Image 1 (cartoon, rainbow, N blue to C red):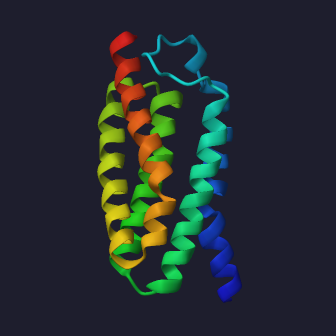
Image 2: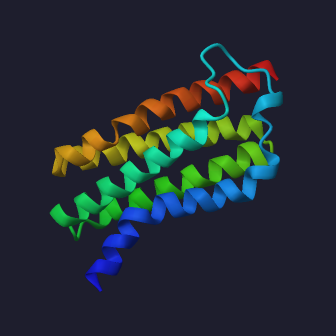
Amino acid sequence: MPKIKNIFYLFLPIVLGSIVGFVISGSIDYSNLNKPFLAPPKILFPIAWSIIYLLLGISYFLFKKVSPNNKKVDIIYYVALTINLLWSLIFFLLKWRFVSILWIILLDIFVIYLVYLFFKESKITFYLNIPYILWLILATYLTIGIYILN
């Protein structure tokens, strides 16, 4: 049973992210939008999110080894992951651009808090999430910029 749990911890973000990516694939209009300066090419997004989701899974897996009964982190982790996955549906599927700004700010808050909690227990889990924080800063900038320009 522990091996199944470990696989679950490692791969849940990438599996769920792939499912959401499949669901929204026909609704992605990134190429047609006016984008702010520093907007990366469309091809970079699936690569970046795959890496980030993999690092998130690894960090949570490692965290569970150090602190297996930390319910607070468990709740924040799953809520943040859910908020993350729903952002794509809000932005691309529903095209609720203003709501997506509020949603990504909520995501920023949850992820920063999660990474802070990781830092308190295990520095490696913190460091593994630095790319996530940096990408979220860019994603927040893009979300706001796209709303303003469109």
